Image (tube, rainbow, N blue to C red; front, top):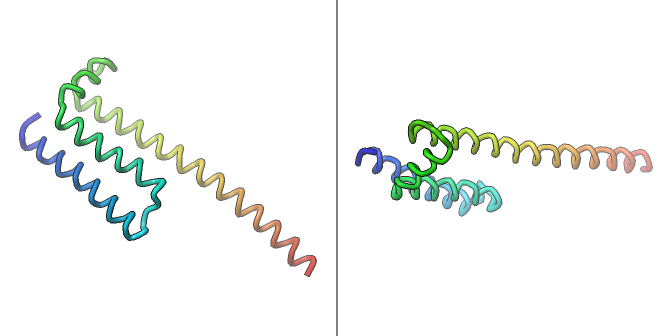
Length: 110
C-alpha cells in the first residue's frame, strides 16, 4: 500500500469517527447504531496501520490480493447491516399492527 493510499484510508477512518460522533451528539443517530459504525472506522484505521493483519487475513481466507479481502469483508458487512435492519423493520411492523388493532378496539368500544 502506497503512502498516499494509507493517508487517504486514515483520513476516511478518522472521518467516519468524527461524523458518527457528531451525529450522535446532535441526536441524529442512536447510540445503538453508532457502535457498528465506530467499529468500522476503527477497523479501517487498524488495517491501515497494521498492514500485516490484512495480509494475514488475505492468506487465511485464500484470497489472491488484499483488495479482494477488503471487498469480501465490505460485502459481508453490508449483508449484516441489511439483516440487522430487516430484524428492526420486522419488530416495528409487528408493533404497528398491534397498535392499529388496539386502536380499532378502542374506537369500537368508544
